[in-house]
Image 1 (cartoon, rainbow, N blue to C red):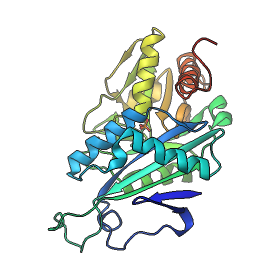
Image 2: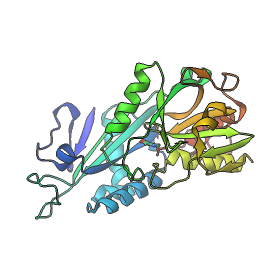
Image 3: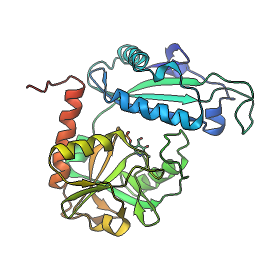
Length: 291
Ligand SMILES: Cc1ncc(COP(=O)(O)O)c(C=O)c1O
């Protein structure tokens, strides 16, 4: 697998960064992950806009790769030379403040941001999706800028690990009695026929998949509101699902070892799973809108 590091292409196994990189030392950076189908990136611009906004919040100058033409050409070469032109893959892009002697404040001399990108094979979780997955709930221990997609992911790492240790797919984080999001996906519930998800503010990441799902729901005539779901409502919801780039749209049928509704993926979730697949395939040119 090939990696792109600061303008150079090289095998990922040989790519190295400085021990003084502020990403390594402080987690001082942001990242993005795109879904790729047959070599085409899904939602290039929306992910780039989120990246640009995160860089702006952290006052890291935007590198050239934040331009869609540059990103697409880097992605094309990574995908082609890593043998991932056919089928599904993901692109990972990370930008840090760069290399400087360790001081908490920004370096006194401007640094060049470190830019790293790579690709991986992706297999959509079809089997699990058909039967639905399990989640646990866990306190949301994160800071108050969860809207920035920083590489500092320790609470997310610990939440996901807790889920895995209990045989679950993911952990839904609870802050002040409401479900914020999963370790790397947004959370949706269907309650009384209405689709509900936490509003976009500083407490969650504004997921691109979340945005697409809300658009698909609107097109399908499914009523949706961006309002928090309480912990109690989560347990008694008619349907629950996660939505994220690498999670896809994933029905949740068990929560903390209790069954959600019928214990099967519900009709609205199943519809959105199908709509999302079509949307992805159309956007990436796998099928045309007229077929
Ligand atoms: C905390 C968190 N929430 C939500 C998401 C889903 O965002 P997206 O759909 O853009 O992948 C992610 C993705 O990594 C995430 O890390």
